[in-house]
Amino acid sequence: MLLPVRPKIYEDESWISYLYRIVFANGYPSVSLFSSVFSLPLKRVKSNDFGLEQVKIITPLMDFHSENNGSLWELQSEIGSTMLNKIRRKNRIMYCPTCLQESYYHRAYWEWRPLVICPRHKQRMIQICPCCKGFISIQAFMQQKCSCGYTFSQSSAPSLDIDKSFLDYQLVLFDELVEHGNNALFHDYSLNNFLQLAFKSFYLLDGLQSYVHKCPQIIRAFSNQGSDHDRTDALAVAFANVMWMYEDYPYHFHKVLDDSSNYIRAEKRFERRLEFEKLFQIKGFDRIEKSYEKYWLKQIDHGGVQKNFSIFKRNPALLECRTYLNKLETKKAAGISCEKFFRLYEKDSILTVQKTNDGHLINYRVERGSLISLIQQKENFITKGNAAKILGIERGTVRRLIDVGILIAHKATSARFDQLRLDEINLLIDHCRGKLVRSNGKRLSFHQVLLKYFVYGLTAANLIEYTLAKTLAPTTTKPDGNLADNYYSDAEIRMCLHHIKQKKQEREGYNTKEVMRLLKIGESTLWRLVDNKSIAAPRIKVTARGRKRYHFEKTSVDRLAAENSIKMGGIAACTN
Image (tube, rainbow, N blue to C red):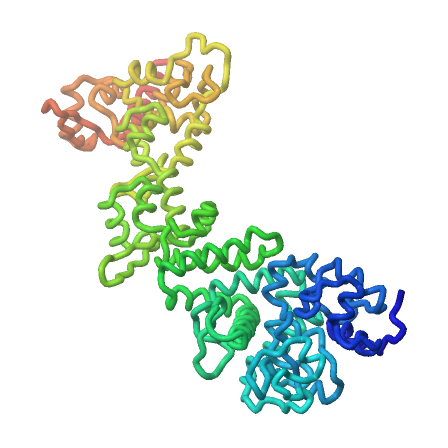
């Protein structure tokens, strides 16, 4: 049933306020009698500590719907009783004297402990009796008189100065808690998530200087010292700093992390960091987690923290996102010695190294991109010996291939001597690999060709040159074979030898036997032709055994051979 007299319900009136007013309006001398009549626990009524069971009993009597006015008791199902007890002011109330002068009732948002500024009149609310300085119970407030006899409606606004920044953040907090505003960072958060974020952020803020007050003031987010009045003010300051912390995100957030690292003792920092990081076990804080990780990645890049830092233990994959690595990690990743590391550092080579001195130790940090380039270079550059093994030829042949321009030697910063590119070696093999066949028949293998025709000046470089020029068409039975697995036609090899001989003659001229055969003369006649300058004097080469080799200029020999051919042709004509 409904109580016969039901006063007007104010839009922002609290549940307990309307209960007291309807009790008095229906002639009950006190809430004690009302509670006994309707089987309500008197202690909970007087302390403004209602549960859902009591609400179910009283609501049908009052026709009061608290969800329309911002009362806090119905938030228990959303945020839990533990969180509700942290933020809800029950029996020890506060009030705005200017609000009372307009209309005397208890506002629902006065139950929020973090709010100490009236959002309507922008003045500090009164938390203790102005006369006796005792706390104000809800029963005394609704009876409009303190036990000392002071009438609350005669209160005037406190004359205390309020920092503008603190006032602004109190208004933002009111908007977030009561009006469910659209703060840029918080608009996607439920009330529970916002409160979880605030209380976890206290672990970073506690003990730091307040960012919202002009005069120095320490943030005491977890203080149990002082009066209830002091603890309420401390909580309001802590919440204001949370609002500041996430206002110019992520710069203010990173500023708090900086200050916490610089001004809080190491043993406390570790415990508080672990508590804050528990926030990331709750769904919905991905953006803050990424910013938090980004901050510590920057710190490890600058040598501020080590790999065993808590966040990297929790998520080792983060270490792969670093920009810099230390010297030991660089040596291990690149497979280089300490001596080689310093040689690369002193050469100002491919490695980008930052050197710092903290007064005790010299630290070297290597940029990850340059290390990756070094590793790639090491993987792609090989020595001449390794190149010879891959090609299936002798090391000396590799040098000759470089000399004739088939291979190119590169100056790799990761090595002391010139090296070869692995991709160029593999490309050469691909271009020279023989046609895949089931059997090579009577063809000669790569090394058999070299052994058989070495005396004619045939080299591995020649085989490769003629293969690249398509003069030779090798075959192989191995799809992934190297040069040593190629087989060649003997006829094609002989054609190449003839070509090699012609090139040699053009380059060096004819030897003694070749001139005598071409001109059809003896050795004594040859030297007479040299003496009378019909043939240019030969160039002399001394072999390793001390023998002299004579090479005659091809042009003069060919000219004399042509003249002899004409004369012999004329004689033959006359004879006929």
